[in-house]
Length: 170
Length: 295
Image (tube, rainbow over all chains, first blue to last red):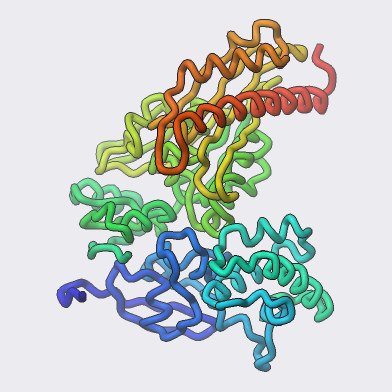
């Protein structure tokens, strides 16, 4: 259902270092702008009211829920989506690598939100305890209930980042 | 799960924002949006206009002095929580903010916005009530200060008029000899609590002189009960804590809802009242110990 008379707003978003000019109605959620207007479908949309965490992205470095923000409000912001976590040479980033090693990815739907949340979490706290790792992912839901492996992956990602010189993001 | 259409304004001065709010009649203020956007997405709210205040200058400050902490309408939960001066002047702020949702929500959500949203299940409206803080609101007619006592007239309702913008909140400093604590029970850490309790315990020379407790998710509005009379003996012994819990439950009317029965809420309120008063008393003694012996 579209409303042809709806006013459109022109805005510029920098996503994973690339600028995009889009034109969207005020009610366009940032999650939908990323997926539909920009074509980056790595950001997943689950509950759309801020509970599940699947749509987590980084805005100006901080993890936020892209379903709880209107694209117009993000005007001028620097955004990193899950697509921005891979290293520039195409190799997996430490959190992605750890998910692979620890089987933190099951059906994969919640994975983008976990990857962005954990990447930002490890920058803030590079050597988390298991308890801190649990707390780090407490805002993200996995309907396969793969939490044990995901917690393992947080701790493994911390080790990998350390081995690679401490850089957790691409 | 998409919002209905609305018009959008992003003013760059406070005057412009107040002008828009004053003339619209059907506007909502958008700051962090962590409570508002879900309401719009579920179409529980459908305002004709959103006034996005994120471009307004001067609303991101945290100002602390010996009397208290003032924080602007664009101060995010995470920023207030990390503010060392605010945590020193009124430590209940950071303690309670740690229970507000999850880190990703705290990065965007504003504390003033959460207070104005007036959810009886939220931490910060209760904290404002317990501490006896206030909210400063502005309109084209001028500014006024609303005390926490009158700020929450009903469930999910605040005293901010539709033509007004809440520009800042203020909470008083922790008094000498006082201690604070907060705890809650939620199904998942960071979710809305089934019951939450915070307390301020005043002491003098180690003896308890006053006890106030605030309750969230128990009644239809954030509720504060003075429990001082249960501590006539001046100590937080088992008998006094039992008396305090009885006194609190006499003043509360725990609600039934889909998440918990009234009986279960009553049990949680009893247990948390005891636990939190004890912790706030310990906090008061700790602080007194750090400041040296009381004369």
